[in-house]
Image (cartoon, rainbow, N blue to C red; front, side, top):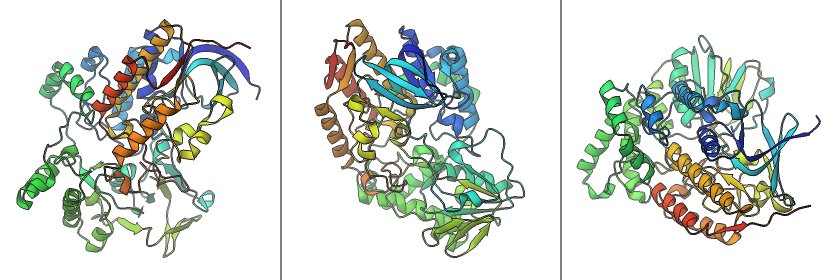
Amino acid sequence: MTTTQEEDFDAILIGAGFSGLYMLHRLREAGFSTRVYETGDGVGGVWYWNRYPGARCDVESIYYNYTFSKELFEEWTWTSKFPAQPEILAYLNYVADKFDLRKDIQFNTKVTSAQYDETTNKWNIHMDDGTMVLAKYFISGVGCISSANLPDFKGLNTFEGDWYHTGHWPQEKVNFKGKRVGVIGTGSSGIQSIPVIAKDAEHLTVFQRTPQYTVPARNYPYAPEFIKETKENFTEIRNILRNTPSGNGFHFSNKSALSDSPEVRQKVFEQAWGEGGFAFTSAYNDFLINEQSNSTAADFIRSKIKEVVKNPDVAEKLLPNYYYGTKRPILDTDYYETYNRENVSLVDVKKAPIVEITANGIRTTQSEHDLDIIVFATGYDGMTGSLFKIDILGKNGVSLKEKWEGGASVRTHLGLATAGFPNFFMITGPESPSVLTNMPPAIEQHVEWITDCLKHLRDNGIETIEASVEAEEEWSKHCQEVANHTLYVKTDSWYTGANIVGKPRSFLIYLGGFDVYTQKCNEVASSGYKGFTLSSIKQVN
């Protein structure tokens, strides 16, 4: 396919999810010529692709939205505490229409590579349709969990039934009625989809590698009075989301789990369990830094599993033994109860690993399972996977993947930029708070910081901005030091890359708190962008 140079933009963005939509809006408002490229045929980002049965957000809907526009906040009405995927997708479509964003989004187009040209200070960006565009600024809005992980199972191509991945679910409804279904994986997407699939399937077999701690969501519809009160409190909600450690509306206790007697602690846990959502996670403030406190929460959840699941052998298989909360926190609806159904069985693939996928189903070391449908709920290549799928080349033709050594040596300044890649920005990139904070306010903070930065460069005749090696070394060291004071680094998870065979282990999330992080970003900007090299000399051929 012939490559043709088409247009020259101020900024090119990748992805039309929460990040890309707001970034496009802000840059257009600031007078920058901008285009978004999106692989799918509609807006939504991860919520466009994650259409699997039971897909639902685990952040309360009134907090899982933009707060840059009071008018938008007041116009949109959420129906329940934890919004389902179709409602979130409808919200993002509403945003795209309200701000007339689609005219600057090119759908069904994948960015395959981007190369920085040091002679022109431009990014040459190539698409899968053979076209190329130029841009002064190249901005990634691909997110941390948009690169679906499909393990290399032997024999998958021989399977005569249908198979699906939760991260790339088809738009048309999948019919499970009367089918023998296998679900591989019990992370968030597996735990959300398993109870829904079980209600329709003739038989459901769950292939579990690692049991999970999951807490009941206790979702419920919002009352009109609550919606009215929420919309009247826009300013207060916005301030809470932007000035708290979690970027969320729930409040952590200021007490250690060890400060209460076992009897009092049991009452606290029972109340939080009954309330559902993140009331349990926030019941005490030291689950993630104190092993003894963590064990009290873990023991309680294990006791609940034994209480709910009637078959003691099945319950035993479902008991997790890692530190609670150090894998992605999960909320569920009737997950453990599903294993009491007669049409559901559980396979422990650590004891009986999957050998291959056959024409008729899945064969483990112990038995064969005949299946009509296989669902891969195997998660994502998190943090760096989405960036590495694009061939991003910085100065001297060095690729981002090469510089970061495939994830073994990720270095950023504030999770926003990396040395050797001028005028390249990452929205909620590695080493920012990203997936361990509430994503919409985190995205807004990054988008607004980047927009203000680009306006500063334009107003002062500055051609390029690039993170310094010293600044990114210092930031990466700080990120690791903070993480090492927590239990996160003691657990294998997709946070650390442990779910991807051969991927280097690293923890790439800033844990110092969203409020602290925001302050650090503001200090960098107010200092004239300390830690960045700014150049006003435009090179010519």
